[in-house]
Image (cartoon, rainbow, N blue to C red):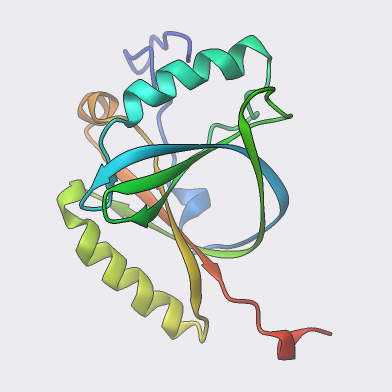
Length: 169
């Protein structure tokens, strides 16, 4: 778990700077994550805090936290999401996943009740770039408690775009 931060007044999520994530095209090659399954409703994981608290202890114990915290959510089914926690190395006993590809990002701020609207906007944004979404990930940058402390609730959308074999060199 994060150390207490006197500036923010929390012992949980670091303050999030949205600028590096705004309207970006990022490429990952074998970015390492631990994968978990959680329940979700209306695009928002609802037992995430409990699962992450338990799993963070395991990741911390083996010294595998990534230098920059990143937790992604992928809505696999109506009530199930997959959670991907970036790590610096394999975590024994946990399911490991490597993500590769090109991702378009967009940052949204506000209540998660806007998720459906934001998903529609993200789809339009990707289409405006002449790309297609292969998979859509959500990066919930802070827990609800820290969002209240900071007065901002940012969610970063990462659209993995379909690779077009005709665009290869």
